[in-house]
Image 1 (cartoon, rainbow, N blue to C red):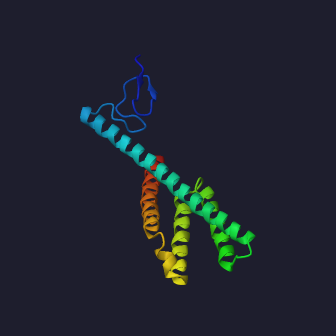
Image 2: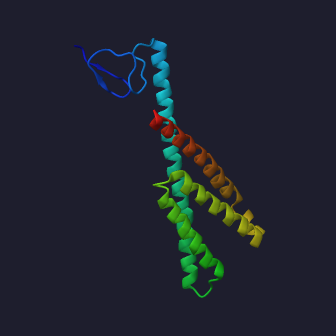
Length: 166
């Protein structure tokens, strides 16, 4: 008996089979095999992009939370602190916590982090419109990056769910 190995999942078969448990079409023509493998590569690329986007968004949460936390602690140590600094410490810790939580639940945690950032931007704009306009380009880049990243993460999660159902 000749052993056959699936080029996709590397399963071993004693005899030639028509289709592997992973869906690879042994009995298909070259075009069927090419389509199957190209779809597999596309799925892997989508998952990889989702992971990279989650890493980027997590990094942004850590940086924004960390910088705000550090600045607020410095102001608290001086005699010039206000209630805003205490609130900033709370939301900074929230962003850092959501960053850590995103290792377990990427989409949900990063979506919450994104919502917290938007709320902070809105509240800041209501308190002092000049502060909202300060660093506007960076805020637009961060928001755009989050939206793009969340979309990539959701696509990756959908691919993973579909693969697990098979």
